[in-house]
Image (cartoon, rainbow, N blue to C red):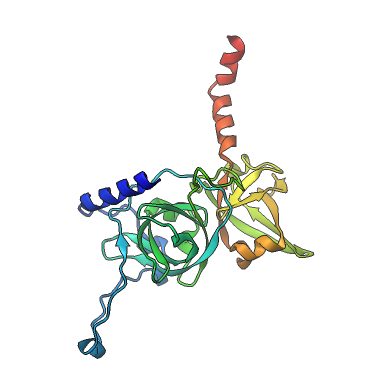
Length: 279
């Protein structure tokens, strides 16, 4: 891992940002106006004429469109608060998040799951416990991250290490689509959550199977094919550690189905099983 980190650091010093390209995503029609705020360069105050301030050292990686292949478990490490989200002067779209836990051993180019979306760290500041990730137009179209804003809380998880205990299931951080919360109901100190999604995703969701909801590894309780819905239950401890209980009916969640189901479907459709039987 140290070799990979050093390699990324050396690459970040030698690569030069590519010239700006024509926009392929209409931000003005797809994003809310509250997010379309550019960073401004503030003029120095009068006090800076008499006092010398030391700016905290930040680490930057550009360009940020070379993600590292990674794997997560769906066990959320901490919740982070979005400090800034929107367009920046170079035409990109960035999100700045505050979280102390995930910055303990962070390096430029590291992958962090943000509400189940694998994103690359492009800048971080350990003094303020903040890090920045870049979002592509496809990420904004495919996930529910575009609905968030300053002050929103998000689930965070660092990429899996070889020595890490596998507490959840294999989560890639590649969001398959979104679902809409249609029911939230308490039973004792537990919380039932029912989510409506598309038929294309529902075919990979099975009772007692795994699913990642906003990056959280959860067990499906029941699937409602006629309603194109599924539900799961959150115990009291989990409710305190993730963002789902803070959402309301009608809000969206990121969904990633179990990758094993996709592989099985691919093998069956390719005739692989038939070829084995005939041999």
